[in-house]
Picture 1 (spheres, one colour):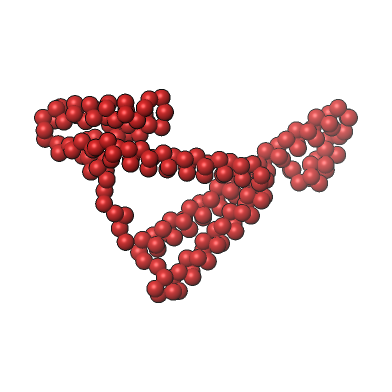
Picture 2 (tube, helix red, strand yellow; picture 1 turned 90 degrees about the vertical axis):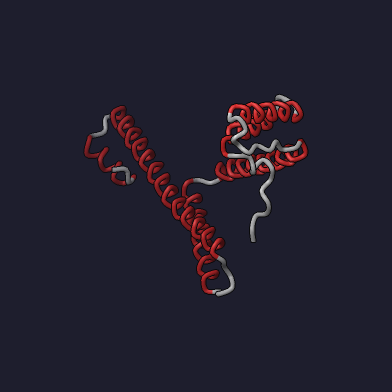
Amino acid sequence: MGRGRLNHIELLPEECGPIVAWAADALQDRDRTQTEIYAEFVQKLQDLDREYRGELDIKIPSFSAFNRYSIKLANLTRRLDETREIATAIAGKFDPAASDNLTLIAAEAIKSLVFEMMTNPHGIDPKGAMALAQALRSATQAQTVSSDRRKKIEAEFRAQAKAAVAAVAEKAGISQDTMDEINRRLGVV
């Protein structure tokens, strides 16, 4: 199943990419009206067409096509912002160990899903297989990043604990042997 027809913005030549990117940024800034942005968008496309002396096949999209593009962009941006907010809220609620556990659970779930899909002969097409492979790869990378993050936090804790023990030992006049024993028992050696 395909993704459908390309819209008029997507059908513009590659050389129009910077102009489309400019329009997308301008639409997201919300400093100007869509009508103003569209008028400048058309002007930029016409200037580019003149620059290439008609060698490019630039068909200027209608205002309604530009409006559909604007709505699609706004919806995508809103969904990305919501996802970012949710991820930020969730990340703040997990300590490193819980985050590691969550990452492991997600990775195992994806692995199970891949196995289930592969054992069902009618269950997956090449695009689906590629998407699952990418998800599995991402989850595996997340496990590595999560483990690396945990190791970094543990190393920082050990360094802070050693510094605290050293400061207290110096103030209290504790011997080096006693300080070493305290560090060993705390597991920060």
